[in-house]
Image (cartoon, rainbow, N blue to C red):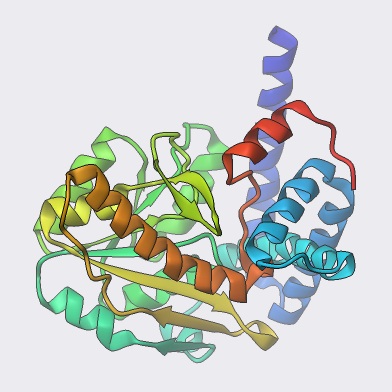
Length: 311
């Protein structure tokens, strides 16, 4: 037991050191070289990480809608690894960029949807997915005056995870690890007319509501819909995707029209399914940018907890 704890502590300490060194190196690397190295690192992880590779491959097959060819699946799986490291490179360098330089590499579609929701003063829930790189979107939206609290997966007090949180907060956003305190803070933020960001495509806490996602029942987090029903805030789906030459496009959808008939459970489920349909559309279009490295569907969780990983 003590050996396992010591091993885990060493891994965390190593991760922290790698993170700090990488952040310094990334801040001085030319962008093209940084992205090239990220692609090389992503390809290496693709070759070495059998478990993650199997999980991602199953996710890709699920979202594709039809059974794609093996070579296409492998390219997309490899793309997930590459995009994950590119996202990390972006995170470490974002604090070095002025907004004017960043916005020059970003296009925004549907800005008026978000601007209108914010000016109404009832609070805005920005619903997104693990797609593309939301760090870039957060930087751009914050620079345009959208002050956000971002709910993230709970992290402990290790230096490694604290460092990631610090990098994310450099753009002026508040980071709220999932907890009862985060829910209270989110309610207060929305009631003051502020914005809260919630990623809705993975049930990290294990307390989600089961809905159909890409044709199969699986629990997804209900926080965005529950907060909207409780506060009257608008839900605005926002997605950031990587384009050619590592430019970005931010897509802002019209506010979700909430339905309100039936008991509360049915109301929450119906609205979650509407939100899931929007996420499906973007994920299906950019599967290699859906950087979810864990099983999403219940049968996958059972499978990957009990089997070996074979390509």
